[in-house]
Image 1 (cartoon, rainbow, N blue to C red):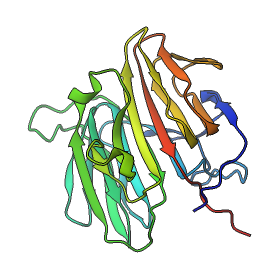
Image 2: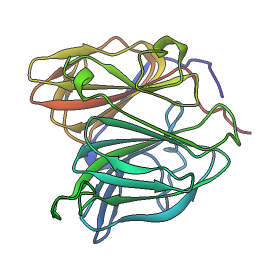
Image 3: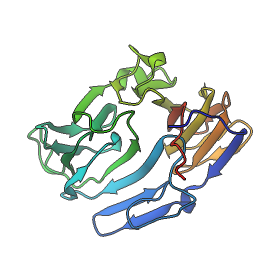
Image 4: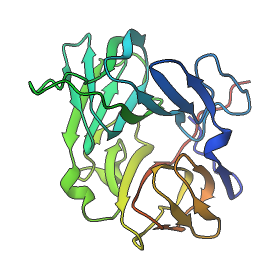
Length: 258
């Protein structure tokens, strides 16, 4: 990993510019190269390799598949998602529940729309909308792991809440730990007129999964818009309508390979 900072830059990426995968059960928008979509100029920002904005139809989802050497954080916006993996963990992820899976030396897992509501209630026909984000771990080949925690109450403050972090700065404050000491995911739910100030870091990634906000110095951001910051921070983000923002604070980037 490379901790060298570059010149200050703010790069706004609009929702409509994203790569997309759309099939009968899945509508997925990719902020970076993913799957069969490859752009050598758009592989990552900082330590963030994947920022997928997914909507999965009821009774459908991702069948069991493998991952390795990746920290995978899932944040549900609407509906509920069933997770099952080869370490024996299973559960339902819903809005306000932070979830992390460490793929490490290798893991198999599936993710499906909880159309039968595992709590025993009636079936439903609601899609599930979630954002899945991948960052590299500090070490390869670690023991696979899983962690989740509900943080709905903390989000009522309207401030930026540490949701997933490996940074010492957020030890004791972050909801779940990830295996990268240079990265943290911060989340805010904002009502119209509420503002938060972005942290100052070598690399930031701001994503708006729902609502509309105004970014100081750059103007309005709609649902699906993202901003990549390099060697800058401190800007205010103000909600124009009820909104949610996901902010990756990163103090390193993926090392360039010759």
